[in-house]
Image (cartoon, rainbow, N blue to C red; front, side, top):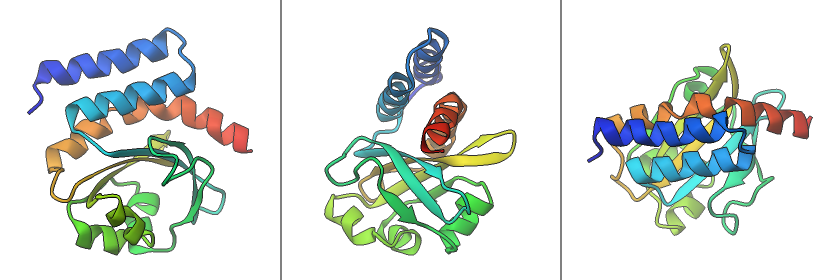
Length: 168
């Protein structure tokens, strides 16, 4: 279990990379590494919401073989989209039933040994830019892990703006 000191040290590492002018990919890796140290994951992805709000595009993936960068995924309108994309709320899917409920590609997710997910909306001035997605084995995550992961979302905002401009 992580301590308050562990969480602060991880946040400091990410904040320092951003403050020192690291490129957006270095910040993404810093968030990926920090969330892995604190809550653990087997897959970490970042997706921007495309115009219209019913599709997302992956621009960062810790497993590009299974989840390549530039992959577009239709996510709405779905119950998951109502929670995360429209409601701008984090989502904890603790088991395979929750993965099946949320994602059309649940079979691929399960085939990778993944059965739990945390989705964190990335917001700037109330506007949804995209999501940070953290997956691991079924039963791995708990409510506190969602709160810890959400603390990293603001550090991703500048990179998401760059990705949106690049996709423009």
